[in-house]
Image (cartoon, rainbow over all chains, first blue to last red; front, side):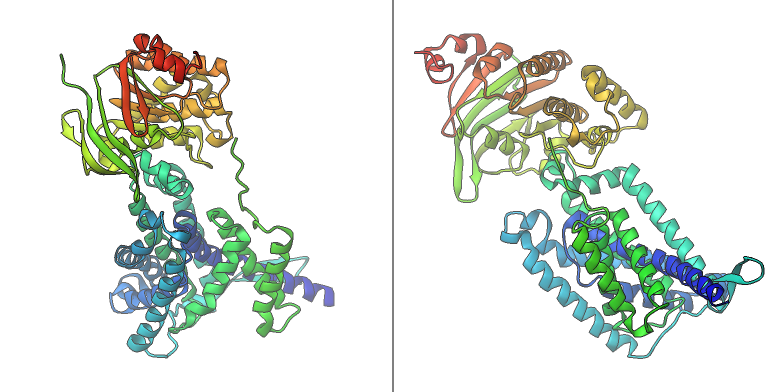
Length: 319
Length: 240
């Protein structure tokens, strides 16, 4: 009987890990897109995600999405719409601030502007956190959906003994995350703008030779990265309460995911985020909940020890 | 005589405070194949980068197809048909040969059919690329990468194609193939400006040549005449 309970617990943790991991994967993809194309380490990414959560909350409540789509589908529509809102905010942030310390303007500077980028994005993070505290207060918000408290039952397996319950809210969030990643992967792989982003990422000077506007590519990558993470934030908000400091909790997960996947690899970032979700949920089987993040970083250190370039990190060899 | 396609008048430029070009004069007519020769550090690549808008112009004028290019962006120059195949090829890693070629047409508002026709055209010129359509372009041999870089330049429908260090590091057989390709490209009406270390090769294939020395054009003329010029023979062909 103990074996059956363990089996059920493992399968349950696996299912929860896959679902949370998919949303973490989306979150990491946003950060990886920015780092992969611009080589900018964006410390404010967690705070843009926090803005995405608030944007989804207000789109759902104040902009009438709840009235049109209802309380079940509404939060997901709001989470998706948070993407375009944060795209505009990211675009403006790059145009007004980030562009001064990145791209072709800083190509000739020592460290290519990385020191200024670190300070600037850290400053943006502080402004966003404290600004959110001023505007929204320190209350816990949540984007409640009735689906958060219901589940699909998979099984029973092995007679009537083992069933796996999949939370509907997390399941839908994971499906939307996969959809967003599929659209992004198609865009990067096949569209004109996708080719320009990849060219700007690999060799900005050569991209200029082709007539690619590298600074504009960086702006689009930054805005897109912020928007994708904001959608992930909106989706997380359907299951987890949030507050102005929530970004700090997730930015660490994001960086761990991106490094695990391999810096610069977008698909790697997804698998990095997925791995973190799985480790986090599976660790609850043997560790107290408070040690979830410890488990993530022990696993992280093990991977980095044996494979420093991450799962999908590229070792470039040119003939 | 027709107005020159490219007219460079007393052009000056360099990197930061270091001036490399000290008043370059050059005129190139439509359909010519021009060789730009000179020793290391003479300013050949810098001149091409100046023409592409990647090096700051500090003096003089550059006219291309009747337009003054001074102060215009690199993008505008590419859009007007002034296309640069840089030294070292600079293909995009992680992108297939096909995607590298399509990036050459980035600024063109071309339909899918036009792009497909252009891909067929460059594949006919360099059949080895067609065999490697989906391969990461940077994993090909040096000769194939040079073919890909030239083909990528052609995808932009150039009026003037500038090729930096055509034969550097390539086997003689591959260089012969590239020279045949240049001849075919010229017959389509594209003007070519080729920087070439191997002066004998450069003078054998070009109509005219310019010799750059310390950032100035010191000798210019028909390639066949320059091949017999004692100064060229002594300085670049190693003859007494």
